[in-house]
Length: 217
Image (tube, rainbow, N blue to C red; front, top):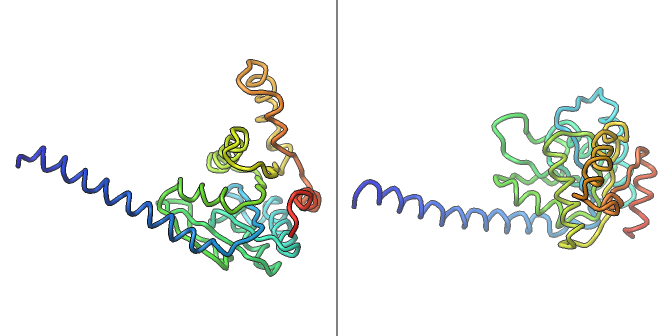
């Protein structure tokens, strides 16, 4: 066997084993999360400090959700994720942290009472959607927007059942929403009714009340 053929065969074997690793991660995640009920997934920046207004607001929001009987799911890292896990734990609820293994920035926060580690982003994204009855999206960057638009796309294409998707932080999201209205919708790349998949709610109490209209705990 020449060196080139050896490398091709080695890569093929590695790809086959990767499929088994993916399947194993799916199975482990489903087993861990199978007891979770009435969960709200909360997203936001990992770079928010405890002094930030949105950190405190998220702690209060998650604490309130927990006291109303909801579980809280986050990406398990620092910033908004930490705040949400902290609030849910303080509220006596299930505080789920789904941590992704990254070489920088992402380290598990200490407030999850159920913590799961992921190697693959796409498996983690499936779990966010699979076990959520609602999404609350606070100010964040690429990862936050990825989760937001993933959920909206799945709802819009009817791949999943519609559920509340709330943007919290109207000033932060205003520029994005204006661009969608004034450019994307105006140029026919998106329908006006697609924006109705979103609710803009700044007050945590109002957000929880809104979710309770759709989810009976």
